[in-house]
Image 1: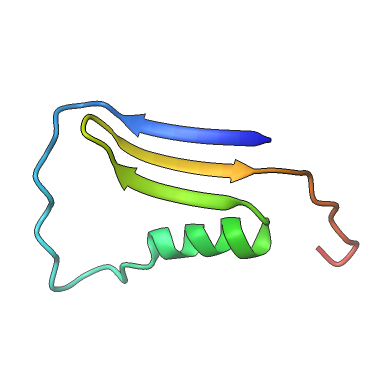
Image 2: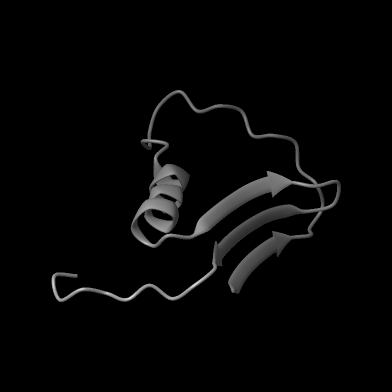
Length: 68
């Protein structure tokens, strides 16, 4: 298994206000879809008491076809 984890242990910040314009809001959705559907891994994003944590995990190596 390969696990990639990024943690932010800086001071907790309040949730940012929701933006009303600019950006599509698709960034994390694109990453999650890529990791899960295309690469066969798992994706987690969450907030613990002291951390904001993002994890990407792959349990096995996937062979690529000639078309990829």
